[in-house]
Each structure stands twice: as structure tokens, then as C-alpha cells.
Image (cartoon, rainbow, N blue to C red; front, side):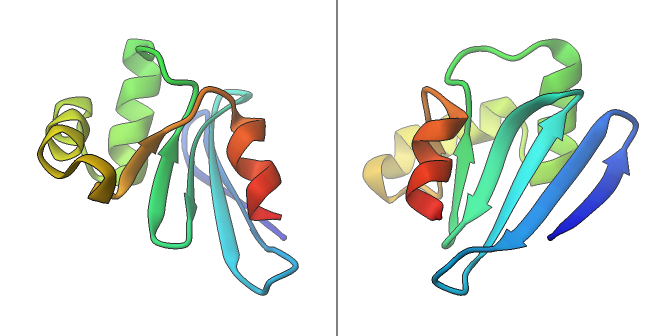
Length: 95
């Protein structure tokens, strides 16, 4: 398990699950806001983030909120982005 500070108040927790796959979880302040797992990017919670959290997501993912929404509209279920209602909903399935 590795904890890495990426920016001011933005950290990434990275670990290997029981199936030997890497999971990366991004925290803005103390709240998990995104996870990278198995070629997908999970964004949670599925509501508009504050300006600072949106900036953190842009820095972490390399995509703006607008680009993420455009990708999801264009690619539907084949999008690399998935909105989740709670962090627990994805993290439980990753372990």
C-alpha cells in the first residue's frame, strides 16, 4: 500500500487487491473522489463537485468535467468513465 501526495490537499492511495490488480483511489481533502481500476475511471459521488475538487480531478485524471461528460455521452457504456453513487459501491467490488 502506498500513499502519495500529488498536490496540496490531493492524495492518492494505491494498493494491490486479492486478485493482484492495482487500485488507485484519489482523495480531495479527506473525501474519496475518484478511483482507477481495471482500465476504468470511477468518479464519486455522482454529483457536481466544488471548484477545488473539480480542479483536483482535472489534475489527477487529466480531463476536465466537460471532457468527461462529453466522453460519456459519446461512448455511453463503452466510456472509460463511470459515475458511482458511493465510494463503497466500487471499492467493495474491487477487493
